[in-house]
Image 1 (cartoon, rainbow, N blue to C red):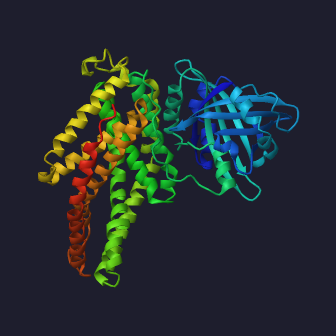
Image 2 (cartoon, one colour; image 1 turned 60 degrees about the vertical axis):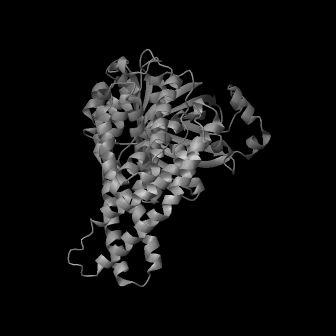
Image 3 (cartoon, rainbow, N blue to C red; image 1 turned 120 degrees about the vertical axis):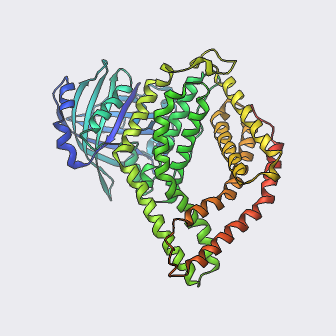
Length: 516
């Protein structure tokens, strides 16, 4: 068994010639480019049992030989794919289970029904130009330029991508090479494998908006290891929703990208207590840049599909309300286009590559400040994460309770400040939950989420007021001032209705003991 580590990049077919003759690639090459035709058959059952178990089973023809490959485990973040791979040389183009040596795979394929139901699901056929590169620092990578199609019986889809497969050294060198290539070739990070493309084509189902998945933390981890795991998790959450957002499939993709950004920024805020803020500053600024690009589109998403839709449903024949909706939808479309332009930009790709390089290099350790750690820790790199988490969670819990004791008298800015603290505590609790008892942590997070939701709805009035100020209603040709007044009144009434619910959710939160 080998662990395959590769950085996958997408590029327009029109840029292939430019990449083939790229001076940097040629200068790093230690072998001549060899082009091969590859034909691959992917197998699964009619119910996709292998896919559900995160197993890719394929037979690939190279020349006159067939190679059986089984891939599983791992994942992809910011274009960096890591999976276990088992390969067997075959005499014929038929699956062979006798050469499998991994115990878990042996057990899986012992199932006679699985073996009997295996059938070709899709194929890939492409040209691969391959060469070996010696990268700065001594790492070695295989440079593969692939151009071809994924096909089922009924359909096909083209692809054009670069795979930088690490042969020796660390993944940092792959990100650095990609950053250098980005100056001359319009590359983009690719989280989707050929197998995932094939399954999407075979099933007809595209990936739905993806919510955050739990972070795999362990009590024996130190603070640095925990930070790295959480930061990669948030980056994956962001990138996994990128394609759906660009294809305008559902407003939820943009929402999840915004959530991922908030989680990532919260991660940097949490761990700034352990490491130097100067180490985080460049990336924090980039996260703020992307947040600014996405925020208007998300705010208008919520307003147009939520509050405005509800008001219009109660005033379906009012011309002023119809005019207001038309104006708002035009602004909404404009902000969504701006958000897509930002995500499609070279700036965005460069940010993601720099993020991957920064995490791979563990750059924060070089600038860590041991004096910033809590008393239970020795250094930022060795402090037990559980002790760090308990100190942080307890501090923020006390802050929430301090606000809660005077909840009835909080003004709008104070309620906004409370919402921010509750949101940060929720993200921190979700990050560290795996270190503690599952049931208590789930109850605590659920009560935090309810509290955050009420505070967020109450904050919508301020957001709506800001959005309405963007409307061009100076001459009021369509009587929109009246419609705007109706919307303002509607939003204000919702806040009044939520106040009793706010107290109820606060009392529920108080009854949930801390889980740490």
